[in-house]
Length: 299
Image (cartoon, rainbow, N blue to C red; front, side, top):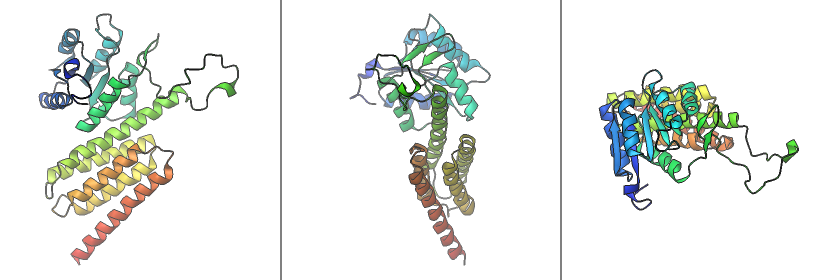
């Protein structure tokens, strides 16, 4: 998203985050994407007043303690005072459980972005929400963006009289919602690794530790969502990091290559099981080769 895509003056954003440093980073990213009006506030009370004045194109909200952030989302979706109840809302957070993501979606958020957030991931998600918005649903039990990602044939207006009449590619909404949550969670975890890897240099123990911790989080997430191939790829990265340690032996380019492969695994459809397995096995071979070199050097 840039000035050539849309008129910059037509884009506005509200960022609600109590961390001054992280709020500033998000605002800078938004401005570089073409948001000329990007306002940051520290809490939901200030956020509500800013929302009514700004009428933002998009809202980015840090998950505050307890239910504060979720209540703010519900207020935006339900209140008659809200300038635009259908404005895209993205939850920014370091929380990472499947239950957290599902809770946020049930409150009416459009997306869930795990910190640290890469500029590319933020741009892609916001672009999609603005250029291809989901239908806005208002029902007794839910108000927010439609949680289906695939739609039936809108040209057909007749009744479905038999089960066989229902198109096979229309998934059950609950199954589709769960699959989408799992996909978002895996991709957010990989994006966190990629963000840490970009700052990695040989001998930087602190940066290496951040990468290692992010990979452990990915393993937990991949196990939680049942993605065995992603678990394998992440464990191979752990094996390499443990063997090299936070020393100058740790090759930042090798780590970046591994992160890129994890990105590929997180974005390849699960139906392409052979292709995903090939990526994971290539990572194993790369780590085996690196560790053999380490043993040879030690000898």
